[in-house]
Image (cartoon, rainbow, N blue to C red; front, side, top):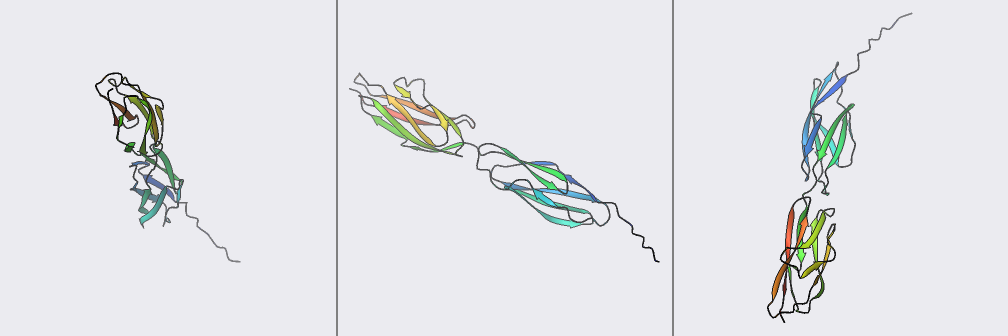
Amino acid sequence: TEMKIVTRLPPCTYTINPLIKTMKANGGSAAVKVTAEGTNCAQPSLSPGEDWISASITKWSKNKGSIKVTAIGNNSSVSRDGSLIIEGNTFTVTQKGQKCTITSLTPKSFAGPSSGGDYSFAFTVYPEDCPWTAAPNATSAFLHVTSGSGEGSGNVDYSIDPNTVAKSRSGKITLFLPTSGKKKNFSVKQAGQ
């Protein structure tokens, strides 16, 4: 009988560099270098942990190569973390959140009667998970906000006190986004008696 001698090669081990990358809110890509130790190592396996991360091998030769990792845009104001498993190694992607902005005020100002009353204005913010506050400025004591905070696009309800003098008066309600520091003023002008 003939004996066959089978030589088993040790398994390949893979290392990656870098281990973590921060990406912009609008998305982007990063290059990861991969090195394998062993004989004629195969291309590394890629397993994204999140649906917003994708990856492809851009180069592989003689146990070395690179991988392109891509993150799609983040539609939230909150940063997020994700991972890609590269042949047993965890590559972490940290993606920033979108900066909160006020995209519109409707209307931008209001001319009210001397009798006062209850009113509102609409606004839109991006992204929709942005928190907001609304308050009259210090010199607008005749204005009162009844819906002073919330999250996402909506309405600010406010009331105007009656004006008991002949002279008209002006004031402002400030819509403020605390996470980004952005603000817009809604102007109110009230007629006199």
